[in-house]
Image (cartoon, rainbow, N blue to C red; front, side, top):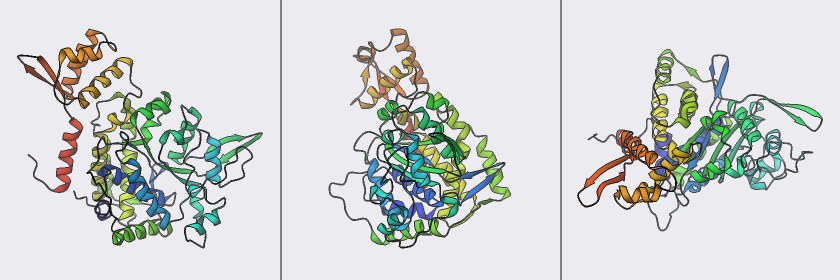
Length: 429
């Protein structure tokens, strides 16, 4: 698999002998790079600015090695930058996160000590000494920029916390935030947050309020789904030290020396305009708002890719790589959300799909109805089968002995395989 981007190719070579899915590593690497850029790197876009910060949630069943991908990148960041890290467990309270962004570790509202770097320091200077940096160097533009790494997404957002979701929407956009502190009205100026988290589909459904779709929170998140490991490695080996040093050097340079604004020439403007009008290939009503925000995700990703080339000018290759990565990811987004935000009938249909996914072979109509009869009426069952066949999620077979049989058709795997083949330069069949 080859991108136009040398950093991504090198990073994938670095993590080749790990079990985490490749998309988990790709998004972890780019999330870390975008965090290094803070508010210093941006693209002027009409009356606003687009920053590179991203909300990325790696989704999959337990033991698919989500946290492995996160931890590898996080270690490289801590060894090479002075990034400020958010607390990974806020209890769903805004004030803890606000205190961390302000650097106020003696908040009157909450005792939020030890919010940085696993809680080892209670002040920024001490934090920097712990990672071997004797001098504080936080750009004035980044004084309210923060990076959240949460191995459990729900512990960071809280359980059904609408106030936290509203706050996180503002931080993604980089907008000022008005809030009250006891009897005092405060304004958080120029905040910015990046998130890299892990979750299972069921935990997402349990933690996010249903209104988070309508409020636009889920459309600001890149849900990266994988349901199996890249490979099985009984005894992990040490990762290549020479490549680790190169990656650390890049993160270091992006954090300490890289600055914007990012430019786009007329050709890139035309390409971005073309992508704006392309329809989104996700047959799921929960991603209607994501489709309207996709261009922002594309630009954020392209800015990050350009920065890893140490360039402040967007090029066609950055847009193409960003689009390819998004398409690879979008193929699995509905699976990442599981049953979240679905109607009762849609939830039952999702259960049917998951049953066929986990079946060892074709399932007869009678057995499938016996499984689903408690969740849906017969007419809804038959309509669901027809809809799933029409959209290509299941395939109907016939057998003289058992009658109609159904198997899960992994459309995501087929589409992803084609894109991987394209990136690898293999001939398409």
